[in-house]
Image (cartoon, rainbow, N blue to C red):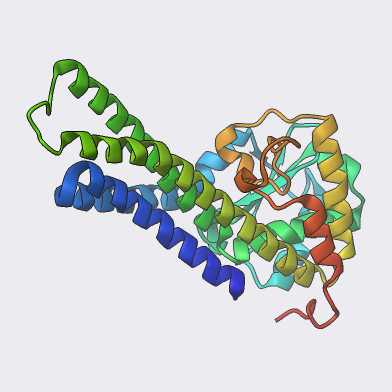
Length: 291
């Protein structure tokens, strides 16, 4: 419940930031336009997120005949989680990784790389699949898509405002406006800080949802050890075998293939893997009881 409340507050903050930048750059009219634009962008993210994520990752659907073990694991765990059978997809990459997408459980899809099927044993692969099903069950795939869309829209509006201000400065606009300098400085600060703030909020939402998916995934599986072991193996492999992915979808993977070791914690899309493992191993039998 704590992570759910935190996510709701962060999404509200992200939307408020979007409306604020619209108000600062266009007054009350700008606020209304920004709010309407946010609604349209969120609807677009809701409707197209699953299709785009699978297309950008190069995932292709597989049947039970083509990947019997994978299909059996997904089917068994989906039943245990009380979810409809999601689509099962495979990504041709030697780097072990996986992600889930879908705007609702009825539209869910789980995609794994060929590398993860070769590296993990059946229990570890089941731990990863349980984690991805948890994302679907918790509607995390929808939440992350909306967050990414709104954050991207804030950055886009800030870029437009930057070029508009530059054009006005070159054309000599607003020279007779007595409050022009103060307003311009405020607008410049907003243009610089708003995209950074939006990115920080988006990353915080992503980290919060990963913790929840780890816990829910362990409950679906009935144990935490396989997922913890899988996370460590995938983390090590990602650093030794970089994966070519579209940056727009990198946050969806169980371990961000673009995270690296040098990115500041504030801008990480995922919590530190060791922290995730520690939390998993601290779960008690009561914590793992499937509700």
